[in-house]
Image (cartoon, rainbow, N blue to C red; front, side, top):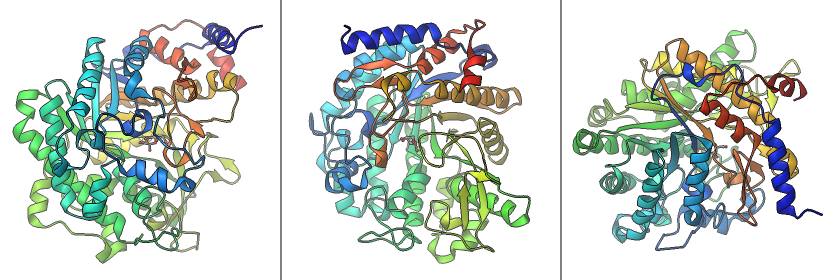
Length: 510
Ligand code: GAL
């Protein structure tokens, strides 16, 4: 009889033989210096939630006080225990063959109580060690300052992003990071998906601080029609202030670049009717232009100004001046395309993510799905959407440098281990989406990097541990990391190996 570990080793060996290569996709098609990486975020992988002086953050408090809001009632107290296992994880990255790693810094580990509480030197030391380990293996750190988590103290003091006081807090935090790590970190992003974060926190109430109003949800406080836009305004101005500081005081001597990461679905019009075509445009506007138009054109998009009127803040002249030239690159997080149906002329349920744009997002047209479903509702495998979104951003925002900062495929955790590790669906997804990136590059888009979400299975926010996005499987009881077929496939692609193989068969089987 084999032990469980023995069985797992046998299974992994068998998968290594079966694993498909990156047939038809060639790393050499991408420009020299192209970053190929994997991504994670602090709250989702670090654990050690109260160790070495870290303060409580908004997600610590939310998951502990409202476990019912997380599908499996769990939290990020331990998750991948990356805080203690980062050396092993960096080793995994080296084996994988990536030349960069996108991770986020935990604000509450650096400033446990915000500015007033002082800098936690143990927090600085942790990221120093991580960065040193990465560089030693030739892996470029690509660092996010804010990936949904912030010190809880700032919620108490300012109502987090609803108060203007947080702008100075974020500025100070970013400055501490530039000073501490900027000699070695050459890629910075201020915010990860502020569009998702503003809506989930203040419109739908599914993220802390759980603010919303009817019909979007039932929360103790909030105003779904106003608060997301107030929060977004403070986030946009915080981004501008931080980039201003970086450009004035650090960029010349440190030689890095700084951008912002936006979540972008590609909205296809459900029909050829004018109202659905306009609905798709509105959805893009409320999703993408909301944050990027101010940074490129100094103003919120016309559709939003018209529909939201006084609920949408205005930029003062001084603010408009500060907004200029504040993006070195755009990070695109892209997972799916989706159909957009108009809700202005025909009534729909509007208590959804796109409800504020009077749009309903749906996955089917005439009973046919837009792509193969994945474990998360509303996320489909539609590879051509990647090229479309890159083209869209490239055109609207002046051929700006683009990094695909997240792209990935989810599995249900309830699937058996064999199925989770033998992740043919993810291999096909990555093959399709990376081919689509390659096609965008061939057509002249200024794409400079691609990061898979995620390096390893982790805490998936309100879904807890019920879905898995990792290239590496994690057993959350033993913390054993196991290479999935997709990791082997990505490795082969990165190594430039293109043996004739079974990919076509696997595609047909899938
Ligand atoms: C993004 C987010 C990541 C990860 C991913 C998968 O919205 O930035 O943290 O959760 O989605 O759903």
